[in-house]
Length: 430
Image (cartoon, rainbow, N blue to C red; front, side, top):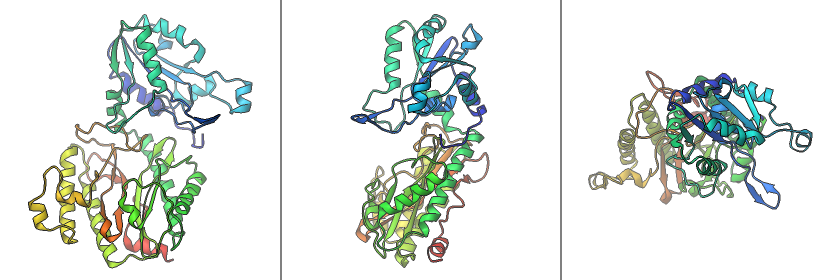
């Protein structure tokens, strides 16, 4: 792994929290992801399933975690099943986790090789009444393939049909949404790497550079700082491209006078950052661009203040919509008649700001969290309002990542990343 070792106490704490939510005489199983094929002998880079990583720190394919708090044998209350390494694998793929290294990573003492899984699972299943299966219930999920987790669940339910079935995901949705201090430090590290990338491109951008060259500058800086990749597919959208919310082609030339919207974040140790900045290709904003930019920045700052414990997700977005409406009126993009006659289900401001303001962030860029439950301290959210004006050929979005505090305003993990117009112009023209 490119990242530095993570203190195993994080994963011990996470398992303890999960166990506290389990039913008596129940067992939970978590699988690693597959390595997905492309064609011929090509595969996609391995990405660990975030749930088994959250609970164990194991970042390796063909791994299984079993949690069974009420097991009669104490050594079987936590088990890792791992792919057995050998000299051939070490030569061709690099060393895999040894049993000793797995304990150092996870804090789990009992480690078996994967070939022993079915025999040991039979013993465990005779002692439990309920099995927790791990399904993907994220509100944005749209999974069309059968995962390793899906196959294991199908095998388990078929082989042991008399057991009661419970779901891990509602527990994990709540646990993962509230971050431990070590997790916040890891997210901050990802944000700091993103900052380095942004400062690099501020000195790189000029008329006639290509969007993909900017993407490459970010990636160069990310790799130099122990990030293995972008946290999500980067958006580098110059001019009118910024009005396409998920523009990822990044293949156009940046023209003098245009703005570039960059929605880019580094990952670190599987944790995400998520930043958006809009900068002028020529190093100076026009007056109109400044006015729209400052309107977006004002909405972002006011929205950030609302992210406090107890805040209701739906009410939060209603209040942000009111602030955005006020700014759009000042910019003459909408008028009072538009507001008076608006459809409550699609308010007037949605013509220029059609997406949400915030989402949970952590191990996934759009992280776990139950939107019908009040916000809590130590949740991490993005704040990302935007104004998109196709008729004027530009769009502006600004985004930071913040941690909700027990009291007061959230802590901005990206507070050192330039965002004020004067600061951006100064750096670009230095």
